Image 1: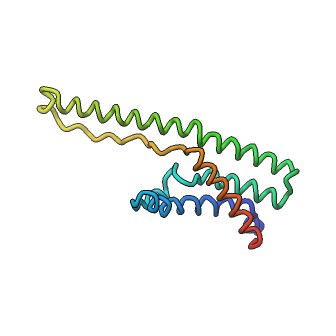
Image 2: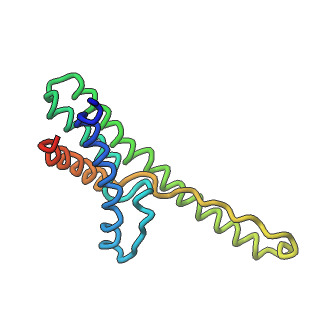
Image 3: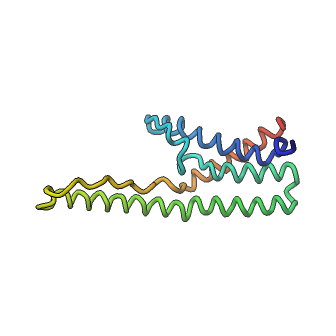
Length: 157
């Protein structure tokens, strides 16, 4: 089964898993707050997207050489993913923060307005996900994580 010998694929999957689960202890160290849900969430330090695509590109570079077309494609793919993580997804997260603040202010206004207390209970609204993208430093360390893991794991395959 050649799938189990596909080093770039496995190192990318390992990098995603590692980056996701290391978020929990890093957050605990930084904030003294234990949040196990971070292991299954987007955003945060390090970027698992960046770790995955850099591990994939590094794995391809190790196996096929950095002059191969496959390595070039994977590098462009990695650049686009990391740019998106710090750009569009990060901006969407910042907009979610503002929208959530507006929704809370509106609900406070409505609950304090005269006559509204006689009406039925409003359903709680699900807040928009605010932790979507990454700070540039999170993407950098995610990328570094992927590269280091690829070089460390290559001898094992």
